Length: 447
Image 1 (cartoon, rainbow, N blue to C red):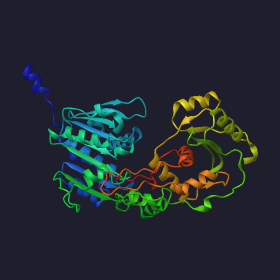
Image 2 (cartoon, rainbow, N blue to C red; image 1 turned 90 degrees about the vertical axis):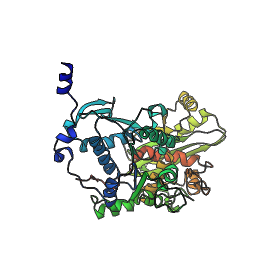
Image 3 (cartoon, helix red, strand yellow; image 1 turned 120 degrees about the vertical axis):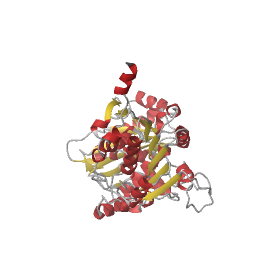
Image 4 (spheres, helix red, strand yellow; image 1 turned 180 degrees about the horizontal axis):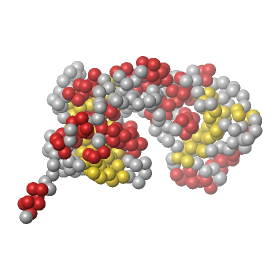
């Protein structure tokens, strides 16, 4: 009886019995590089490219195809953040037919899965790079999709990559990577980009690795007009990385779009415009508060408090005095300050709160902040009143550390005389909502 039961209920290969036209939605690769990516039989494949170049859609299609061809196995999808995981999930939903999914275990928010179970017995787990070293352990994982470079959110991204290599080793599995090289010539450049059959830097080729570079120009689903518009919006440092998808090392001034005529006496501002304060904490280093208004998508820095070796109660009084000063405004319906975004040091923030100045922790992603401010400068949406003397003085001086030849280059600005720039950057991130690199709009897909 038991043998008969097992025979009647044995696991079926649904990928084989469901018609090909139903299991695979209409799909055309977004570029020539995507076609080569799909055709390659390498076990570690990387598609480096600019924003909206079709990387995520290409890698997701390959990943879902592997789940169909190899049923009953464990798969991982790893993204930078939950927001990025949500974007990858949208592609997976598109490529998976509804009847192929038997169960979804949701996260608490945003309807992002923790894992999904497939009808053929497979399981896809959805992780973030910052999930922690203990998460990246299992007996074996057949294929792992890595979305973007985890170094953007953690210092141990290369170790996560090493853990992933260990997971695919015993099952001869796959790692599929799609990334924009915004972190420069770091571990991804050294471990994946250089270690290929056509490298010219004397490295030993890894026969399991293949990589391609794809630019926004290569995407068939973005119009020439949108491509030109996107390139025109990008700052000088963004074009190589975010448009052409190239590994480049940032050097010299951080704000290459800065112009001296951005320091201008713009007079009073409408009383009903949005207002906020950016605060960089300090004692020996100066305590800085930059006051900004956001009107017609332009950021106006209109006042500044800059002082070192001063008690917090005095800083609090200075902030209140500027916030209550009506000489900066014209018109009716005064709109109150909506936020004070601040450095994260909790003890000092607690003492400021005791003095009546409530704050919220700022978004401190340095690379995103620099890109964002450069883009605002290029678009003429970044103005500094002469009253903000220290901000105007330090913006053009802010520069990257000199890179040593042959080092694993992690680009960081020099941490000297940067307090006004940090405070001003917190405001830009607050008003603009942080990182938004979809400069083309629309669906850059393959349908």
